[in-house]
Amino acid sequence: MVSRADFNSPESPTWCIGCGNYGILNAVKMAFAELDIAPHEILICTGIGCGSKLPHYMKVNGFHGLHGRPLAVATGARLANHGFRVMTVHGDGDGYGMGLSHFAHAARRNIGLVDLVQNNRVYGLTKGQYSPTSTPGMHTPTSPEGAIDLPVPPLALAITMGATFVARVYPGELRHFVSVLVQALQHDGYALVDVLQPCVTFNRASAYDFYSARVYKVEETDHDVTDRAAAWGKALEWGERIPIGLIYRVQGQPTYEEQVPALQEGPLAERPLTKLSADQVAALRAEVM
Ligand code: SF4
Image (cartoon, rainbow, N blue to C red; front, side, top):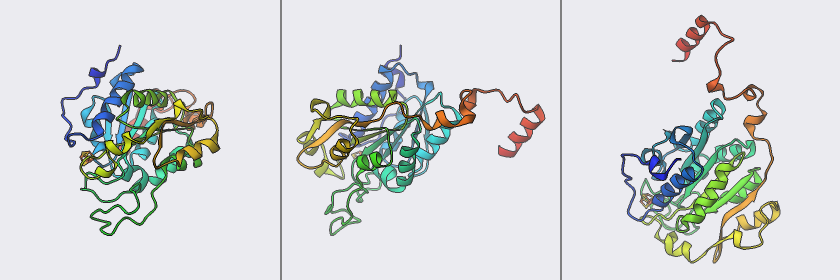
């Protein structure tokens, strides 16, 4: 039986005290433990940002890569070995800025992975520039007179692009966060989990006080997660009340990897290279190594 402690790493997080990333790290460990998924069965791909350091703080397979590109790496890894549990963990700048096109295409492909976005609505690692989800009017070093751009609406965009699982969570509601993440990990296909992540250093206007006063759980309403139009409405609800929980889900839609003929006989990584001679394998290795 896997426990949360099985994911502990010898490295200690360097995040600011009070950062929402601590809750995210806990929730990820708790969800994998609840599903009894062992560290060696998991791959977490990250980009660049405070939260993208997460694989250093967990004992799992990790790939800490380029800014905005973890979904590309995760897609490749999933196709090479769809026996792996693949998760991307990255911030709003990484996921909804530099990686916006990867986000849109992963959603429409229905590739089987969990895309967890630490949405703190600011660039934290580079000291507080406004991000793709920042509030209009927000004053930062790169928007001294107030941000002008409209924020990216990630949940509505995911639904529009064909995502089959769209959810939002908040680290201040940890048990609820874990229960939604467990559902995302059990989902067949692309699952977006947008996290309202407090950045207590560079976005104090949108930290714990702001969210705790506003979030409510959609599961406690009569919201129908299969109703696309209703989900779109919930996805765009933002203000005095902010919905968290599972917003939209489509079940039974084939995943990308289920439709690739070459993957029908099982994960590529586990198949013997029976159709190639030893010389051909050696030549291939020499070419790519
Ligand atoms: Fe967390 Fe913000 Fe500090 Fe980065 S800068 S570690 S996001 S609180």
